[in-house]
Length: 115
Length: 116
Image 1 (tube, rainbow over the protein chains, first blue to last red):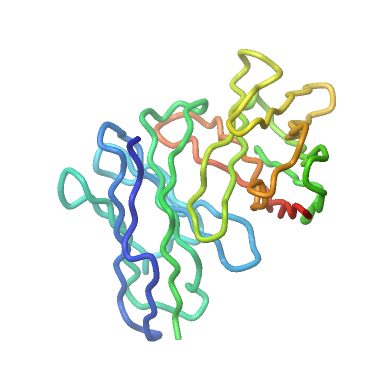
Image 2 (image 1 turned 30 degrees about the vertical axis):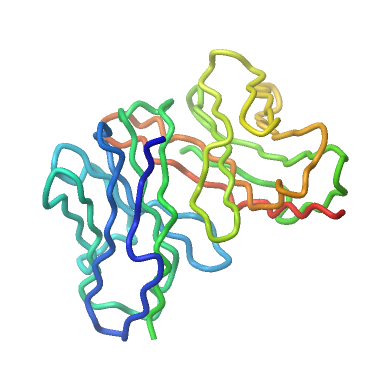
C-alpha cells in the first residue's frame, strides 16, 4: 500500500541552526501539507502546497519557514534558524485531490528537538 | 470557521467493553469529518470519514461513527475494545474554504487506554 515517508524520524539540533525535514508523498497525489504537534498540544496546520506554490499558510509559518518540492518526489520543510519553541513532531501529508472530502495520508512524523 | 471539540482528553475502558469517543463540530457548511488514530511512535492513520453520503460510517478495525446534524456530533464507537485499540484518537474537520487547500483542523485528541 502506498504511504507517505518522512526522514529523519528524529532530529536534534542546536538553537539557531538550519534544519530540513524531508517527505516523500504518495506518487499520484497533488496536494501536500505540513502540520506540527507540540508535545501536549493539538496538531496544527502549517502550510499547504499545490502546483509548485504555497496555497495557504498559517500564522506559525513565518519567514523562518520555507517549503520546496525540489524534484518530482520530495517535499521539504526548512527552518532557517531554529528556536526552542520549534521543538515538535512535524507531520507531512498528501492528498490526491484538494477536495474537502478527500482524506489526507500522513507520514510517521519527524520529532524535532531544539536544544 | 470550522472547528471540532473532543470532550474527553482521556478515556479508559476494559477489554471487551464498548468504546465511545465524543466529538462535536462547528461548521458553517456541510462538513467533511474524519477520525484519525495515532499509535505510539506511528503516524496518523485514517479510521473513517463522513462526506454526506451516509450518516453512519463504518471504518477499519470495527470502528464506526454516526453523524448527527441536530446534535452537531460525530462520536466514534466500537462495540468491543481490544488491547490493540490503545492509542490517541483525533476528530478532524476539513476546512471548506475551497481553492487548493481545504486544510484539516484537528481536535485536541482523546487518549484511549484499554485495561486487561
